Length: 137
Image (cartoon, rainbow, N blue to C red; front, top):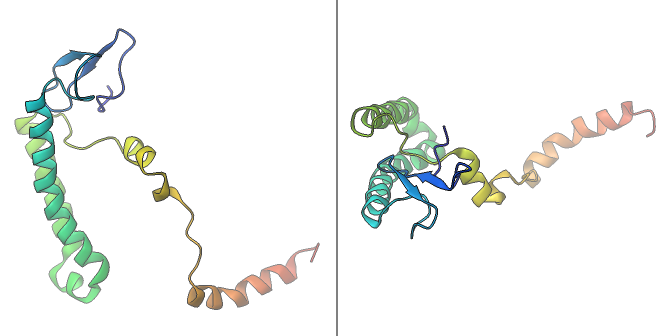
């Protein structure tokens, strides 16, 4: 079962991301059967996303505080609460888009990050040793 409204079955009918009802391919907003469904989806995601964003940024950039507050556990509990809400109020339909859809819309998230200068300097000795072992070096 596709969870993204942009993925349509062959018969030209799609499923609304919010209410789960089928709608025609000519709908005004791809992924949703109506403006009300699109607004409800976006409002819920804004609220949930703000909470996750605040906790994740602290987890990522304030490590000592994050450890003291056990933010990773809090993020996991929050995700569990959101999923339970989906099961209870949305008949089990997920309230998130498929990761493939998100990554396809933001290709830079898959880009290979070059090592920073400091990391490159630390890795330099390992790289030099590895090159010395190469038969073509």
